[in-house]
Image (cartoon, rainbow, N blue to C red):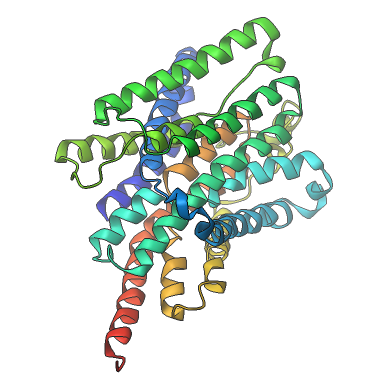
Length: 402
């Protein structure tokens, strides 16, 4: 629980700092921003490599996973769609009629994608600590959470195409993505690479370095319009997939401590990376920015609080999608799986950071960050309820006459 509360606390602290540091650092802020963005990408790669290491499938029985992947897609899609539609039709003033603007749909659907992924790392740790490791609920949640993280990562590619258009550089990015997925599937759990925290941090740095060099070189030769920018989520995830895992070895305390520290730093940096929104003249900004959603006027904090609560509610209603499946299991087990998937964390924060990279901000970004923070604070309640449902189902099955 302490880890979850620390995530939320650091995200909010980072958000506060993001409003103070630009004025405090003055002319040095662009350099500070460049350094923190680099650290953010490296820490995101570290996290995604570890998520990929958790990804295990029996390839001989791949057909048995098709229903699970479909359920995971639905559990990722409905929160995303609900939040995007709420942003378009409820947050923006009706007189703006932003739903008539195609760019507003693209921007909103990119930003709201943060609501899709379940935090696999937080979820697995807390369910195991709750004594559910050997239950059907834990095993099913493990598969679904990894699949909806994967679905989020893959879907970022067409969303990226929508944002910047179908230029020749996008064909290269699509080819790279397909090649990475093919390598991940064919070579899953194949390579005996060193997997201590120092090695994974080194891999993360090298991935960032390669992507950054490629971006700067293509920017130099073709300009910013013709640059090739690969999001670090997919290559880092695939690198984790192809590592030969040994889950019989319990990670040392130092490994766990360093991994947690990097996750903490990541959440703080996500908060710090938020654009300035307090004291901003949105009417003046509207004439300077090409983003449609950035032009939505900032409401009062009371109204923002209401939006945060509603977004948190509807995003979790979308996560109840697994209730409609696995009818051979009890209702309490299916509900336990659904509620367990309410947890959000690093992957969703990574999506927010990517959205910021496309210069998306304003009230929708503020609501998204605060909704994620609220959801993190509620994680303990979600896991406690999941445990109660799973245990109740187990007791009923034991009490049944043979």
